[in-house]
Image 1: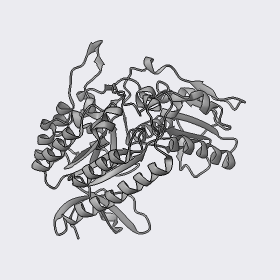
Image 2 (image 1 turned 90 degrees about the horizontal axis):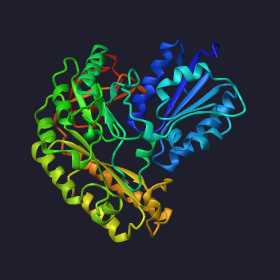
Image 3 (image 1 turned 30 degrees about the horizontal axis):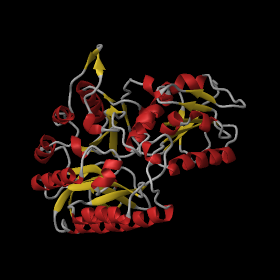
Length: 425
């Protein structure tokens, strides 16, 4: 396959996937591939998939069909969570040439070299129980903020989630390695790093030199705070039971860690949290929010919430709505429950009708809009530091304040990747 010269990428899902796609891209570019936009014609298309929802599965299939229409002779490679969970199903999609599971995606260069157009797709995968290695990844040049993967996998077994089956056990990089990556990124001019992982607060698990490593997320953020050249850090998402008060206090005193937390809730009903096999109850969540606001009244707090989980009654949903309405949070990421194969939740009854799930989703998205609006209004007249993105669109550029308020303004070239004092209005 020596004639192959160009490659295009598409990423579905989370920030973690974006960091891994960027790393895979650099591996191929180092091997001589020219990177192209996904909407252009390329010799190879790589789709890094998600499988958190049914929509992600459908989108993958749609993308393959689009490639088939545009460039039927091109090679199509599928990797990511969907590829690990359902390799045979993906291999049967017309147009797919190679399926790479969790252990093989970073060996993509070797696999593509051996690729040839045939009648059936080649599957390179293994049982997820055999995946124990941590592969460091970070995004670069895709946007101003860089996503740095420091942890992978999850030892939790929430009843709705396929992530442990797709990514394996919890494991992480070492503090020393992460510091090295941060220094490398600083040398490229990166101003802001977003720390990413499947279960970020579980950072520290891993082996080094055959010995079990004992480090913590708290130790990691303390070390990162001293890296010269990086001006801002964000914590992408952290479980409430792993967000200890030491972390909150440290962020409040840090000049580099932004006053911004994203904390999954999933439900405001203790009955549903128990059915979801979450490791906390709503009272703990409320305590964490109160603690954050005590130290940082200006802090932005984002919330993940799932609607329509099996057995969620109207009363359960009202509990969630009222809990979030009263909670001092800034915005919600609302997910409609989607049945996932081989999860415990499939056995929970009664099932919530899809139409009702969608209605509940809309209600919480409306609440999120009001929350964000209220949070933004509290800061009108304040001057806060905004990091503007490198790329503009239609003559407009955007950036985020330290506490994650989006700012848009007419494009100014001198503000690209710059932190600017900005009066909110």
